[in-house]
Image (tube, rainbow, N blue to C red; front, side, top):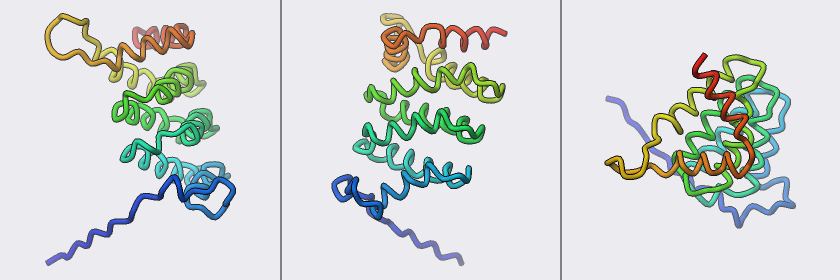
Length: 172
């Protein structure tokens, strides 16, 4: 017989996180996203994404800046995982404009990454978030607003060329 024990830890409070204190847990996690070791950075980013996924209050400008930096990381592993993580966060919290901005400004630009596997990850995410879900209003069934919000954000941010490059890659 196997005994499983579930330990529940409270989520760190944003109010308890004093930006001036290097000892606060959230500051320590954010500092780990700047570590020289790839797996440490990836672990810290995973923790932040997990916090953002389960609690919408963590989708704050401070954490969104960390997501942006992760999308621009020198490591292939981190760039690829950030593509997936930002897409999942956008799927969970589609109402957050800041996540749409990260998707359009940072994830779509990875469609021109020198590494073909990163480009392919962007193509797959655009296919799943945008093309597979788009449905014209009035065609029956519930209309998913996320693809339309993504297209509006692409237009407002002037990222039409980035989207066009990703879609042309799909056709190739």
